[in-house]
Length: 215
Ligand SMILES: CC(C)(COP(=O)(O)OP(=O)(O)OC[C@H]1O[C@@H](n2cnc3c(N)ncnc32)[C@H](O)[C@@H]1OP(=O)(O)O)[C@@H](O)C(=O)NCCC(=O)NCCS
Image (cartoon, rainbow, N blue to C red):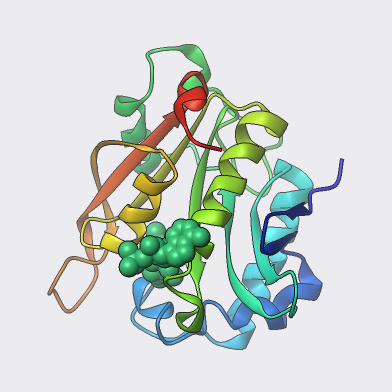
């Protein structure tokens, strides 16, 4: 089955090596990159990301899409799903999932890293010029549909810095449920530098809850 998805306004294409230049328009956007680090990423870093995403699509069967406007072909943003590493940071999410064996089970491919098999992370980033038009929510809804209806995973989670109100609004808008907070490396509101114990809000959607989500 094709991994390209079409929504009302977007063509969602799995990020591959050939998309590096397009991808760079998103993490290199001045309204996007400050949420991910203290410096604007270089083009070489975007190329590395594109290679990693291509490997993840091949080995883990999923990663982020790049979102193109269906009509104009412009790069709107990137987003969608990815597997999460089996490590202590992501292990904090177990508290928000059912006490069942699938939660800790690892994916069969140990490359590019050991990942959870039955639940995924979802995220989004939209270039500044395309904000406020519902594109992130459109990417998010396509991701939930792909996770539940195509990949058949048990749960999707989303994490963002506590003060990232726009990303939290997307989570709520697409029907995810606030579950609590984890602490991990990232930004703290009004603090200059990143911290190891920054608070991140977590939203969850279990497959069994999917029916109550507007599609
Ligand atoms: C997080 C982020 C993707 C949210 O973008 P966004 O444009 O606010 O979100 P959406 O695309 O869902 O748009 C929602 C807005 O469009 C409006 N809208 C217009 N048409 C709409 C439609 N058809 N459907 C839904 N919303 C629509 C909504 O009313 C809402 O407006 P509001 O901001 O006044 O409340 C964006 O802020 C971003 O890229 N931030 C940097 C990267 C980032 O933080 N990513 C998350 C890291 S975990």
